[in-house]
Length: 268
Image (tube, rainbow, N blue to C red):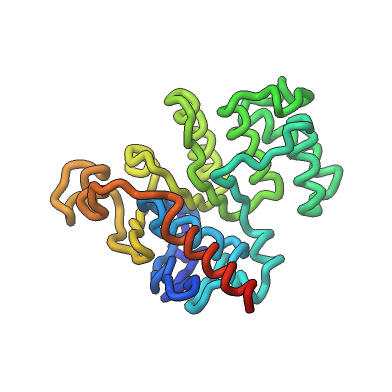
């Protein structure tokens, strides 16, 4: 049974790059044990928000509490609380599956006698135990994604951040991956914070959803609440109605603003 307490609290969060507000005063809570979907078009502010939540970027203003701690005041304690699967691949292709998990476990200070049992358990969970001694460069995209999830769980985090975890995967692999995540959520009571561009995934998996666009949260609620408020039949229809049908350039907005700001800072 999920506890009715917030494990992630965000209040009036702002991230400014020069004169550009990549994240513009957003507030939301994620309850302990929830599967929380954070949705938005390219450049809406999703990845910038995740970077602030996971100590990779400092906010301009506003408040963040992760598992009772401030990510900027107590980075190490917050980092112990979460695992993360990045949008871009981050495994070492020249190590085996086992070695990738072993290296990550050592970085997190997992005791050796515990670590090897945990590696075996996680590799079995994601159906990769038989491939434990194979180099990651021989793995398919789906296998790498499953291994990244196993790696993110090596220190038994309370929160798992998934940034586009199923991007580019076939439907069968996507389905299996979400089955693993759902099972972990139920078994461990682990909170899952994820982004996706597959609206049916969010509608099917998320207990709660927030949609962000142009740095502002434009709606929050369950999938059914959002479709009801927007007078649409599906979450995808609601998403398009709320964010528009125009194509978005992922290279624009926050990324460009960050680069411009960095160049200006370097000239000082």
